[in-house]
Image (cartoon, rainbow, N blue to C red):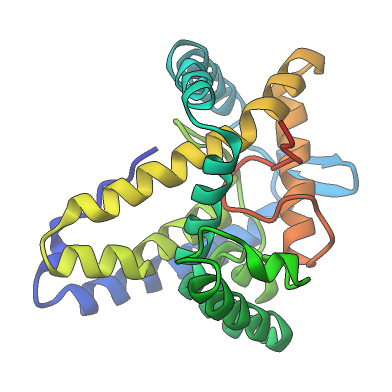
Length: 269
């Protein structure tokens, strides 16, 4: 899952080169938004899905499943055995709090005034009363967490999904949302700070904890989906698009959290 950030961004010209990279990415995504008229469209649950690379995507999914069964799932099982649920919930709250600048930036870019206000209030309350974000005091007060990423921002700007993708170690995504994940990663204040002081392990540790938390929240629903689906690939693809549409439209879903990637279900275990 890990994306290696080029050392180019640590040079004096990193801001300029990063801007060029983002402009190129946005140009490519704009082209991808027009790709829905090409052969390979699938109508599923009201969504138009462009999946021209299905054969490759299925092979990547098979690889991901093999890795999950051999490595990821045993790690998650062990993590749950040695870590009580309150501790896992505290970690999730802390990581959500750390993500505040990215959520806020995307809400501002989307023109979401209420969401921006709630995000600021959550950060203030949870950082202070919630002991650095370990406790979701704001959530108890009715100020719910709202996950926002640059993929959602692009959708609000009218950019389409582009081709459906299955990314090694990550899973379901689209060209637009994968690009959005990359932009959010570059803009992450934790990454910027840790790279500026040459303490890369800070960002990579946070990245690893994010991945662990995401896979923990997905373990039960994906296991059930795999067991109950006649075509697991098609089931994940369909649910992914429904989940992303719900996020973009700010619909009420059980878990608004990060992942470029696979839908998130309620995880009361």
